[in-house]
Length: 577
Image (cartoon, rainbow, N blue to C red; front, side):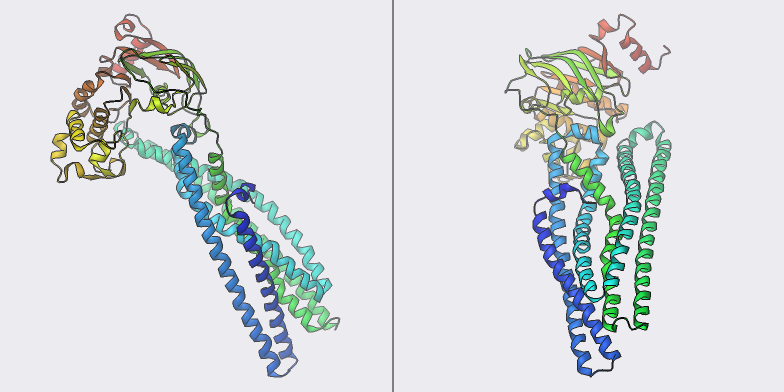
């Protein structure tokens, strides 16, 4: 129930000490509450003076108020701790994602990380609010009450002592079954998150290919499976709650029968019997609360476990190995024996197994292949967003084992299928790689990218605010903003394109082709594409299939024989092979 890693969180031990003290006080207040209520009832039954009834009832009322006051203080302390700790965990999680980046996203899935950062943290906060209080109540209050009951009636104490192990046994059996179902349900929720986010991102492509309705059925199937698992979990949770209530009610009923028979036989006075009967429900209450909240916290526990696994995940990144350098026409990269395999939710993607690849100077290198051939994985690896399992890399006579090097990434501009546009002004978005660029420099870069005419139509010009993810701007204009970033970052001489025009119509793509070709000058260009007309612009072509380079060379050399390049070109044209 309790993950040992909880005790490593800052402030947990101090919180537990404070809760232990407050809960102990609360236990004695509950005890006094039952004692004085029983005393007042006995005095009333024996028709004693009114003063003998008012005094214990006043003390009962005071104990009642103190009980709820301690409970309120307890709740406020736990809520403050839960809120602060949950935010600290969220901050650490985001820092981890920022440090590891696409390496983690590729393995865990974007949907999983989004779920953990948003819904997962909320579940963890609720878990903290419930688990500490309920656990402390169950650990302290019943023993205090049981010791007092033993002093009043040994037989009643023995009866309550025997019933508790039976209740706990049923809790364990049904709780483990519920936890197994909850684990499967949370895993299904993660899968659903990844499916849903991928569907949203790929909706334009799915609509273009006429597959949106078919994929909607896939989402329905995953969602229905999640509903079914949720209902199975709830069925066991409700059954366990019913079993616990039945057992505790039966225990109190048995105790009441024995006490009633004892009173009839005059084997003990009324006060011990009455105070025992009043305290018996209080004795079982923490156990019942713990059991019911156990099911409410299962998702929180699973979310916390998933977050801990992410935070404790070792990064493949190594220390900085690359000293500062300049990329020019004489620069070279020699890649040998590069291997990479996905793990986790992304393991359905194609892994890499590259024997050799050479990049040099201001070449224009096209990376082509069927969908799922490994183009994007190779692009991300060269960009330093994915760290290979092993590789031998020689960059300007410097030996490296991965491209996740700050000095390498400072030299490149990455142009993906969907540019990342953040909430801010157009000028800020264009100055992504050079935040301190002047407005004149930004305007010049925008003009090079063909953005000037569009910006002139906007009332606020370069100070126009755009939404997160480029909301309110067409796909073509988003790509032009991406190009403007590259023109502005004129000190970066490596361009990496990951099918930047995949989601654009042909007319928009051809409108963008002229500024993109202009951008190629004095740059090493690595261009992943499935559009034929771009291949003609390349000096060198790398053909990918199943994560391997099956052919490479100049377009003219590759077209001279009926190899993988020729077959792929025919396939892209729709020719019969």
